[in-house]
Image (cartoon, rainbow, N blue to C red):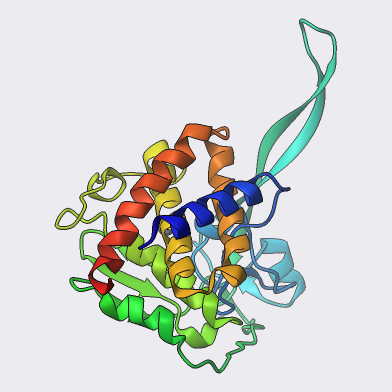
Length: 274
Ligand SMILES: [Zn+2]
């Protein structure tokens, strides 16, 4: 893969990172956790805390004529509340974030009397040849399974599960998501043995995990660059990366580290094509 594409993509990402806050990346349309009443998807950490499905509070379920089953436990949804406080030393007013939560129940699995309100929407796409070639060219690729709602790589099984092409409004997004998971898979112990993948028990939000996410996202952006589909996907990638940079207090060295690792990973998938 050419140096220029790597550099171009990295520069473009850094440029995008300097813009405002944007929602997390989840480009597929079907299966994501939503509020049952509004059908709006949960964002950020909440989309990771909840399983796939439709959720509502105990009260919302009751008001809609449903009933939470006996013994069912609610799941936590968090939000930040900003509280103004006086700084003890400077006397200046400052905004302090407090984490609050409430509980929701899966309307279909944990309650009675209510039906799904979700309308699944599917899209007709032809595969994008240049992108599909990269996928097919990954010689010792992990197994890939297509299932709506979640994109994930399982290191222990060396297995990828991604929403199918018809779940995305843009075919480019499908490849961007698939590339992200393929890049993760290059970290497998039999391939490049990256710490974020080989080290068990890595949990959401910690530094090793955050770094691996950056590697995957930058690597995916690079492969999109190679396939010539980067214009559609790069803004989403940048917003995803930004959320991780925020976790790590916008450490500028980090993106350099991640870019280098992403380049290796991208080469692993693509090198045999050149
Ligand atoms: Zn990932």
